[in-house]
Image (cartoon, rainbow, N blue to C red; front, side):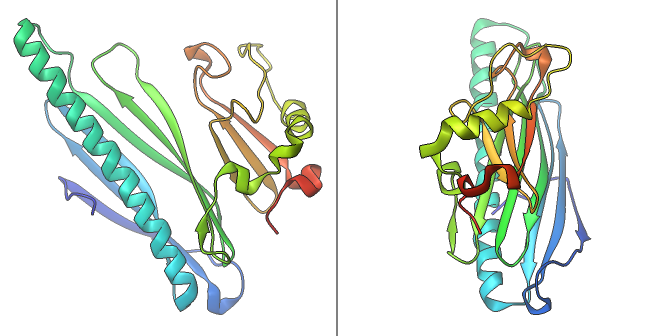
Amino acid sequence: MIRNCTLVVTLLILFFTGCEEATIKVGKDFLSYKTNELGITMAYPVFISRNTEVEQGCKAVNGKISRLIDSLQNDLKTRLDEYLQKAREMKEEPMIPFELDITDSVFMADAHYISVRFAVYTLTGGANGLTEYYAVNYSLKDKKFLNSEGILNYDRSAEIDKQIQRNFKNPENCFSEVPTLANVTTVNFSGSDICFTYAPLVLGAHYCGAAEIAVPRMLLKGDFLLK
């Protein structure tokens, strides 16, 4: 379970997809927590359905999201404790507070698939924070979570790479590396596009930030495995 903190606000954002009896409602939970040593802000989706079978899939996704958030919080708190202990031993002034900021993007939520991405920013005693990305993709039909190899045909990675690179926008030439399936951070999908996300430092310097490349599903033809 996600620990209760100073402020928890729930805002329901409702939208309907698929047939009426298999509608998924997408809620949004917000959490904010701040002390002198630690600051946490996060937003994450909660999926609900009145359809019994679809609701089981929603519960599976909600559980995975809860475990991810708990893990991120616990990891940061452990690192903070270790950092403060070392600072005391070295008689140094600690660079605090540590920070954790989580935001989400829901790409798809219907009776067939759920696809969501989390951007996780952490600041742990340094001048620059780190942003990481996590994808949660789930097939309600097959009742299983999907990794990128369950979404795309990796046997045709060379052809997929061509489409990624054709849709890659680098107007200021900040990014110096070529985006491919091999170095992608997360893969998500909507009804129209496949989204390839590359975390900061993957394609270029830290100040370039992350890269997000949307490839229309129609361009991937048989290389997109989901129907």
